[in-house]
Length: 182
Image 1: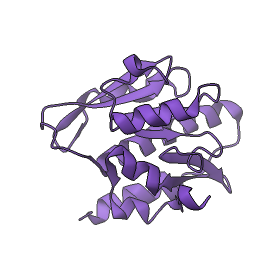
Image 2: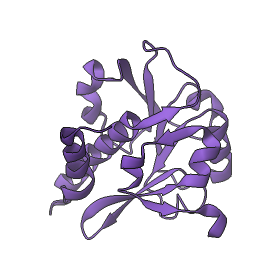
Image 3: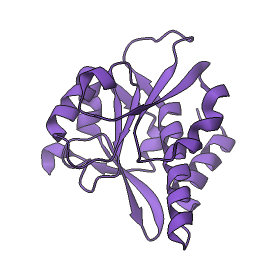
């Protein structure tokens, strides 16, 4: 069960933080907000199987899509006693680069999507992107702007096939996409 403080933190990151006026501030804010989303998604996700409490939660971030400075303070963070590791990836559809990832943020629109979705499902990777139509096309979580605020869509069918589960508390904040009906 979520504590009141965690619910408040979710609401701040997911519903309250607006995007500022200048392009430079926007990019910095965007990176911080997306990193906050990724952290909270991992905090409220479970993967099939029981990982060791000492195994890290590996975040794989497509290089150049989120400022790496955002993750500089993550060295001492833990989720359910598991340390966090952040890796930059250059080729998100490469099984070698995605090996060991628990959460992957991809933004490139040039990669073969179905290949990426298959890799994520086979390896229990929580796949997050800001591609328009990402969730409807088979991705797990799509971040998007609505009225100057970040929101997110979740494709429950795709998420279920991957072996990753999100807390019902998180799903209540999401726009749900049912791929089978789209």
